[in-house]
Image (cartoon, rainbow, N blue to C red; front, side, top):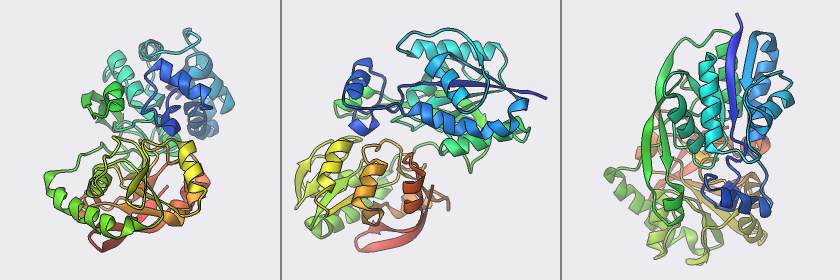
Length: 371
């Protein structure tokens, strides 16, 4: 029996990540990213996921939209799609909603989309829970629980659906952060609703959770440890998170919301740095990266900190990556590994394995990182 799958690609999703632009909902900022050399992220990640379907191409009817909204990516993956509708030269949220509604009307059994939280919200508004969906992670913000762990996981799960091995679906949160408020320094996250996704815990990310009051003492211990000794030497690139914010506060510095700040000798060297700035600062040869995983999801790289790109990690050296997390945050993973999704399989592989995680003042554990 032929499986009918829908594909929607938001071609501008993720473009602002390396440039510290916090998202791609604002057309003017997308154009700014282009002028600074940004290249599309979502199309290549969609192709990577789609390649898993080639083995069963004869049993797949792939419905998509023209050009970079899916047609180009499908053909690049050696699939022959059914192309619906029309699009403008600059795709918009309205195009995404129209595509989702059109595919739902044609009875797709699974709607795959490449984008971020904003794309997930558009699809929710267009079709609600009428059709199961699966997100191919390609945005800057991906707090929602509708995304696969990475494009390979999305492809594997789509292939299972084609083969009839997906028999259960679950409701997953659709979250999004107001980008304008975020750029002004405030996090305004909102639950928009729920979409149904295939039940496959090992292949999809969990919902993001926030640090609770019980973690404050542990965060303070970590902050004191780093402020007293660890940050005295070298250049430190400090990623986003409540734990890293506490470290900056212990130094008397303000932390950029969902940004990467750079400190040296206890002083601020760069605020809200983009990838190019980080590469230049790493050239000195004494740089280190300090990151904390996203609560509930466990991502260390690839979710909201794309400025710390594969190129930056390579230049700094994976051995100079320091992970901090409270014991409560690690326990909440229930034994699941920490995760990396930089978009570069080779860099991900160098980060994978067992790593030391600082969990308190002079306290460390060894925990697994997977790609």
